[in-house]
Image 1 (tube, rainbow, N blue to C red):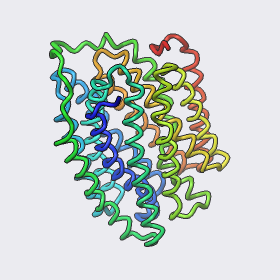
Image 2: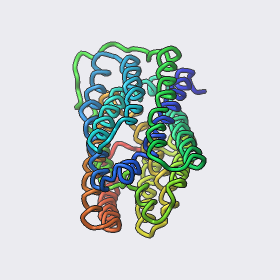
Image 3: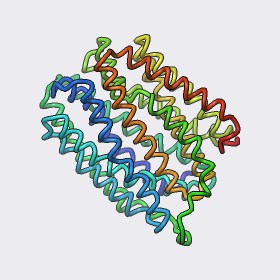
Length: 378
């Protein structure tokens, strides 16, 4: 039985990610084709936005552990995100887009680690199922947002005015999320306050996390998936349907994979997810873009649920380790996006894809050689 606070938080994520998907579905197209910036500038935006949030994710994870602060950080994080997205309406350059995305990512950083600590506190020993349910609501929101964008593009046609109005409209679901978390989510139960910060107790978890960060560095950001779809000839109006496919895949599999994590262990699900990550990028190399989005969805939902459950089970300083997870993904994802954008601009899409494939293959081999050296025992 899923705790009612987790259900309420699920709806918070639903509305927040509805707004986020309405932005991310069209933002790469807005930057490259409306603002007439290059793919390298898209890489800069992705890199800057994710890098800015790096220190904050670790910081607020630590503060949550140190001072037992959960709900205030969660509420603050959702509020920052809710009021920042609509301001993209007035953006006129990639620099302004990067700035606003950076501030919005700070909001996500404030809430991310503490939110997962909250979910872990109410998981009742079933962290796989609990994180699976929450991720289902999360992705269902993204699915709904991308469907809204598709419907608007289909009936109103592609235009700069429509793109900007979509950005402005995200204020509504964003504020709905803030209201729910503020009035319908009970704070996590507190334990005795930690007197000292002792990361040594969690050193055994770090090798696996850093291997995953390496994989994320080489993994194509979904923004580049969208530009690749445009380059192979898919019309702008139909590109949101690829995001629908990505989110639908995750929605359908999230709870199922969460159950399998509890039954089979996180190691097997993580290994399977990394294989699908490789397949997603390989699909781009052969221009099988639609299949690439499906495989990407399996990778995202499987790997994150496995690692979140793993941390819930093994970490002593949960908020801090969740902060390291999200901070590492942000940092290495940012650096990877920067490198990918430059390679794409200097050479071509296929060169960037090949770079990604080779890098992920090497990291995957390192992961396999780690074997029982990581903490995923089951």
